[in-house]
Each structure stands twice: as structure tokens, then as C-alpha cells.
Image (cartoon, rainbow over all chains, first blue to last red; front, side):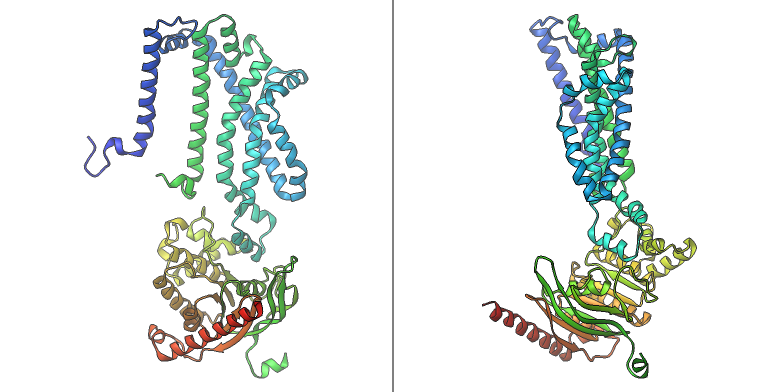
Length: 270
Length: 269
């Protein structure tokens, strides 16, 4: 249907990026459905995709509420990690001494498994939402710090000399040179951190195990597991995965919007 | 001071036994004495490692000599010293801000100096017209060819109306045809604006074509070997490049370069 001037529909990168993964999904779902039906697997072991979808709709009331809770924790943690991470990066680039002194602790924060720390945080912080946000933020913090610090330091040395030669103030150099140079790295950090914030939120919910009105998707998975309600477990899992994909897509979109015009990594595949 | 007023033009740059030794003992440049008069076009010519960029950066005030002094219009060359004589530096790479338009890149030194918006804009228009890029003001650097990016870099240098233009192998990465064109344009600008230019290159032909004087340097250790005056009237056309005089100058420089390298070989053996 495409005009002779345009590329055939299936040759366009944009279409390919949707069609090919879509085909894989259709094949996988078909195989899954086929196996479940063919081998007559009971739904308490593996539900069929169709049953999962049905559960998602019938159980939407608890699942939707849980999704909102998990989303809230994820987004709050992500925003907190971004703000704090950027502030710490600015601190780091102010002097090598500060960075040398503090960077090992940033690494320590990163390598300590959050599952091990989460119980402590949950004991110390009374409000369950706040404690879970803190856990998730801790997980999401490091990529922001390391990427933004790297970015703020990754300046073309000649351009830096040029600023010095023109007697640019510290502030001018920061605003006109360091921050724009750091943006691609910063957005790279955002992309990683958005996913980590979700992982952190889910882990924190698992550890906290809070029920009641403030129950997130992880709690739904736990509860469904206890009751052997495997279709609901799958439905909750699907929601978590979709949330992660949506976060990643949102970050990719934001990156393109912010850098699209000039940064090579964004414009090479136009 | 009185002495100068009587006769010769004022010295734009004086290098007085300036040398550069790095803390690890690497000797980048042996003591150099060099006096560059206002209005000269001086080329620092030599192989890589001869300290020509080091010398240029000392003149710019980007590097401090480890011994000796560098003066610009009798003021010590440093970044902190403010001087009535403006200087512009053009790097080997265009060194533009990739996120900013051509216009914004050229306006950068004016923005940093706090020049009022309206005046800055007018001067940017003039500078872009000088390098023939008026139509490309709104483009991003990556949309331009290498030669055009270099022109933007030169426009950014000229927008501050400098008296002294320091260029560090500015056309080294360009193809030969583009380089010839930019060399010719640079000479026209030099004459029109009565600039003093210090130009670093490793191309003998470029040095002969451009300069009033060529300072020949050699490597290991970096040092000044000889100075040649190119007594050829301006404007110099492409015909000059195929003339017998041109070949003679090029030959002289070539021989000097070979002699300097053979000295090094013997010293090293």
C-alpha cells in the first residue's frame, strides 16, 4: 500500500521494531497455550495465557489497586534517587578529595544486597510506604551517581581550555559546559535506574510483606502463592513486567526528546 | 619602550628563554627565544613531538613555562591577566559545543564576557559572514562538513575581534582541497583585519604558502632549529605554489628538517 517513494512497510525500521518482537510474542504465546492445552497442564501449575488474561480482568479490583501501590513506591523512589544522585554527583565533581573519600561508600551501598538491608530499614522506619521507598531508592541510586559523575567529568579537554581561556566562571562552566556534556550520561543512568527502582520496590514489598490497603503487586504474588492461585500470580507478574517495559519506554522517549537533535547515540538510527 | 617607538613595530609576543620540562623529567621544549612583531604571520613548523603545540600553548597562557618568560604586549602571558589586547585560539579539532547551533557556538566568547545580546548578535552575524557561513547560523555543528565546522571555529575566534590569532594545526584533519581554500581565506582575513597570527603546522607547503616567517622546530628534545623569512609579496595566489621560489623555500625547509633529524639520530646513537 505504501507509495513507491517510501520504503516498503516491513522494511521501515520503525515498523520492524514493533512487528518483529510482536511476531516473537505471538509465537511464544501460541507455543505456551499449545503446551498447556496439549499436555493438559493443571492451572495450579501453569495457567494458559488465556486464563491469565481472564484472571487479570476478573481480579482487576485487587490487582489494579496493587499496581497503583507499586507504581507509587517505584516512582517516588526513582524521583528521590534521581534528585539525590544528581546532588551527590555535583558534590563529587567539586573536588577529587570528596569523591575519593566518599565513592567507596557509594559502591558499598550498591554491592550490599537490598534484601539483606531491607528488614533493618523496615524496622527503623515506621511508615511502611516510606521504608519501601527508601529501599527502592537505595537500589536505584548508584547508576545515577556513577553516570552523572562520569558525565560531568567527560568534557572535551580543548573545550574546557577554551572556557578557561575566556575566563569563564565556575558557574558558567557548569551551566554551559558540564551540564550539557553530562546529559547523555545522565539519561543513560535514568534508563538503568528506572528499572532498578521497580526491582527495589518489589523486593521491599516482599520483605515488608504488608497486607491491607497498602498492598502492592509483590504482596499479591505472595498471597496468591500461599493460596496456590497461580493464575493470579501470573497476572501480577505480567503487570510488573509491563510496568518495567513502560518505565523503560518512558525513559527512552524522554531521552530522545531531550537529546534527539544533537547527540550521536540518539540520531544515528533515525 | 622609547626604543621601539622609534623604529620597529611593537612586539606582539616575546618568548624569553622559555622552556617546558614536565615534573616526570620529560623535556618537551628546550629554551626558546622568539620575538613576533605585530602583523606577522609566523608558522611553527616541525614533526610531532617537537614542542610546537607546547610553545603555542605557552603563548596562549594555557601552559606555564617551567623556566623563562612569555610576554604578550609586554604583559606576562597568563589566563588570569586581563589585557587590552585580545587573543583567540583555534584548536586542531573544531572544538564546538555539539548541542548548540552554529550561531550559539560563535557567540560563546561574547556570552562568557557578558556582551549585551543585541551587540553580540550583530557581531556573530559579521563573523559568520567573514567565514562564509551566514546561511548556516541555525544549523547544529554535526550537520556541517569538517571544513565548515573549522570555519565556525575560526568565526568564534574572530568574533572577539582579536589582535592575536593562535592556531594549533587547525586544518590538519581536512582534505587537501579544503585546506588550500581555508589557507587562502585565512590569509585574506589576516590582511583585512591586520592580525598577528601564530600558526602551528607539520606541512612544509602550508608553512611556505602562509607565512612571513617560518620557525623550524625539531623533536627529541623539542627545540627551535632555524628561522626562515619567506620574502614573497601578498596576496599570494595559487600560482605561488607552483613557482620556482616556492619550491626553493620548500627545499630549504626540507633540508633543514632533515639536518635537524640527523642530529638527533647521532645524539641518540
